[in-house]
Length: 136
Image 1 (cartoon, one colour):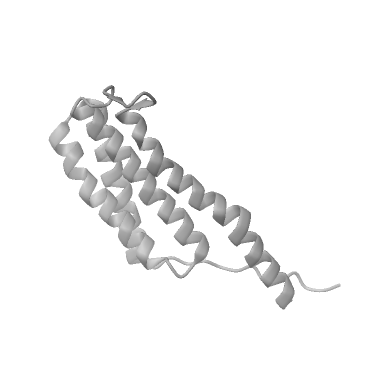
Image 2 (cartoon, rainbow, N blue to C red):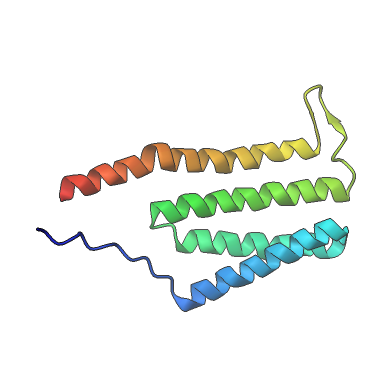
């Protein structure tokens, strides 16, 4: 009977975890501000929320899984922030051509994030699994 393969461990440095936790706080403040229509605070929270998401993405770029998921989060926050702004400034229901309106343009960054994750799960992750199997 052979020993089970050792499970890979992913550890996050404490200062990175603190930054991620702060990121969640800013994100919640942004979304609560949106819900309560506190325009100034909601708009102000875009900068730290998106900024920290970009820093986290940069710091984890060496790990394909983390990069893909953190890029998806960056695009999610971008789409979410655009949608919030469209409602704050009243162009959410303004027609854009004959196809859509202002807030529905948020589908572009949402879709980019989804495509990044689809590529990761359908292409990159199977490649990684195949390469790992080949080295065993």
